Amino acid sequence: MSTAMQKQARTHPHRHTKSGGRGLRQLLLAQSLSQFGFWLMSLAMPLLAATTLRASPFEVSAVAASQTAAFLLVGLPAGAWVDRLRKRPVMIATDIGRALVLGSVPVVWALGHLSIGYLCAAALATGVLTVFFDVADQSFLPHLVRPQQLVSANARLVGVEQVAAVAGPGTGGLVIQLTTAPLALIGTAVGYLWSAVCLMFIRDHEPAPVRDKDTRLFRDVAEGVRYVLADRFLRPLVCCSTTMTLFWSMGYAMLLVLLAQDLAVPAGTIGLLFTFGSLGGLGATVVARRIIDALGDSTTIKLSVAVAAPFTLFSALVQPGWRLGLVSVSSFVFGAGLVLYNVAQVSFRQRSVTAALLGRVNATVRFCAWGARPLGALCGGAIAELVGVRQAVWVGAAGTSLAIVWLLLSPLRGLRTLPMDAATEDRGTEDRITEDAVTDTPIADAPAAEGAAAADAVTDDAATTKERI
Image 1: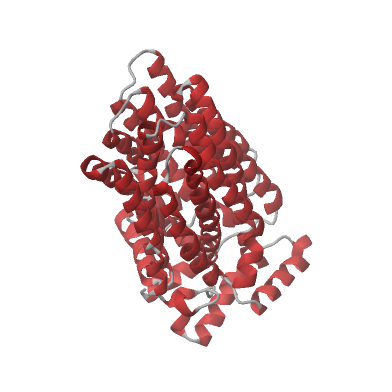
Image 2 (image 1 turned 30 degrees about the vertical axis):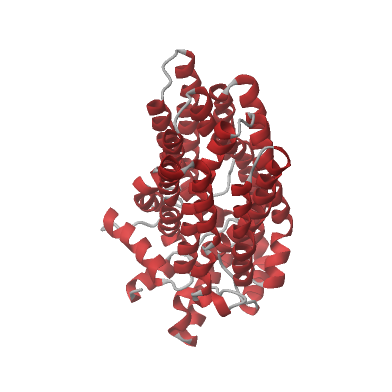
């Protein structure tokens, strides 16, 4: 990374308003029904194609791919655009937009005009808005809490997501079975409207981004990409995430086809099977902070992938009867491991990248990891058409299990914890002291009434090895 880039990354540190408790609670409320709607949509869209529209395996994979294709199309520039804007208004606007788009699907279905093409278009439009929401969401959290609170805050947010993920597939499967998949999408639209209303009540001050008058979109995007590629810890994490996402998406889309079409499993049962994965994730959120503190974030990241990813192989063994439970076992363990992995690596990223670059770095990571989802879904559909649906599930599970190789061949291999400033670890003691001072500067911006707490936070940060994800 160039010296100029390093200086810019440290010039505009995160601002913290100190009312993060109230603001974080509002954010948690916003995420609750929004995430419930997301999980319901993730199940309803492919099942709508597979059951209501009787689509082929490749058409089902096309619908699944459309849900995340936006990460490839606008993933990188979204970060540069979001870095130029206040994050909360972006999140509110995208929530309302997603509600309108998904609310149109049952209307078109009721009029008798719903097709695979319209479903793909609605999924793509929702995905574009989701890209902007997610980049803004991850970049907004550091404005609400101090750096040392990020692991706990991320664990709480992931906990909300996992509660929704527990209720979403099971409830969604029953709703789909009772009312049909198009009507089930109304619940998703309501969830996004709820999220928008809750975000409107967050009163924490978010400073306007500092923008260079000479900024250029392409240059801003390239800067975020270079930052990720230059960081010897972020780079293998992105490769690992991308590999897991690519192959997991390949297997997941075809697993739904295998269950719904080949094995004729009712939608309600399918939803309940995947609920166990969310229960595993929910349990992991309860102990995430303690596990990361005990093992170190680097060790947690490696173990979560090495142990959980191979359990996806169980899903390829599913058969009628008691072997349907293999889907639940696979989902439970993989869901728990994925939560630990995400809490650790997302917090690492939020602590180590300052506000000036965080949106672009988040967008770059999302472009790689989430951009692999549509490619994986399409590859899964193609493999299913060529050699069979179950074989596509096998390929997806095997590839997911190999994602750990990226971490074992990286500097993370021998580390227990990740440094706060991994990108500049080798620059020397003098530079690191300067950067630590800059990193702690936002705490000094606290109101006078909180001066003692701010001073304690600075002391704690100076005495503690900081970890980031």
